[in-house]
Image (cartoon, rainbow, N blue to C red; front, side, top):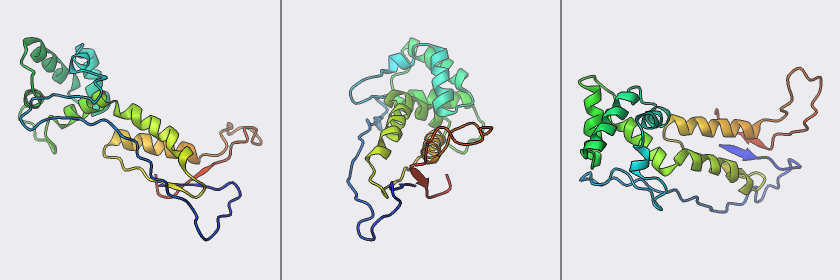
Length: 193
């Protein structure tokens, strides 16, 4: 949570902030129970074929967005299966990702990070989150509050960095004798971020 500070730091007791509901709609990831769809974006900006273009690109997506340790072997097997026509469903994708891990014990299902990475890439979730974090504070009234709930470490890191940046005052180098930038913190973090 963080709170936008008023210019004069004086808020009246009545009506400290006005709540205006604004919702940013994000496209949804669709994977049917029978496994027929691998991924689809409402509006169709990115296709599965584009994501499976090269092993290096796919491995990069799995590593960056899924923080997948075995990104390269999974990417190689997914690409091979796609070229052979064996990658037609989410069940096929899960089977391939699981086969790379073999019998190693995991806290989560071996395909979880793979699907997370594909979902984030297809829906461009981090780009949308970045855009939201840049624009949302400007909709707050003085004293207004913004809360973000993140479900994985990539989102969490982005939200914390954005909140820290918004609550930072002077950005002059430490060796300057006095502030010359004139930047004043407009926001205050209310929780440990």
